[in-house]
Length: 150
Image (cartoon, rainbow, N blue to C red; front, side):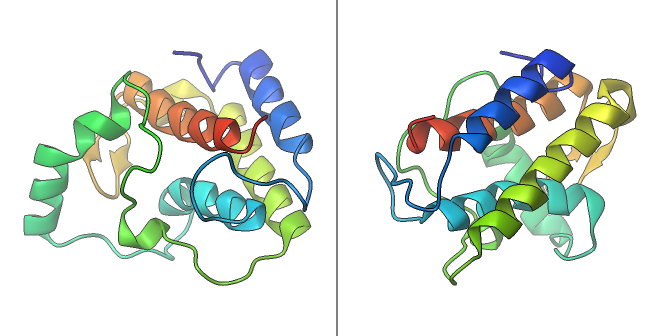
């Protein structure tokens, strides 16, 4: 899997985002392009903001047991896979604002670097190593950028 913490990879992902327009349509799924950008930002919101509540111990145990491997592993996400409730974006979003917000999150993460994330606590999965953080960040972005044909 490509390493989102490498500047070249970050630049490549941002270039793909920059190819999106407000008229971009998904190859599958129901989200608009602005909703998709907001959806991709949720992963970063969980790292950098207090917007999302920490799951209770039982839910966290279930997430670690049944979801973690799919999220942080190397295997790509299938099309139309289920989305956790906090990742569902159903309201209208402003394209340019969401695009800038996501790019800012991606740049911040790349600048902090993989060592910042190595052993950092994930809201849903507990401590993750730098490879797991990379896989979670990159795989999710790649999945949705592919969904929108960029």
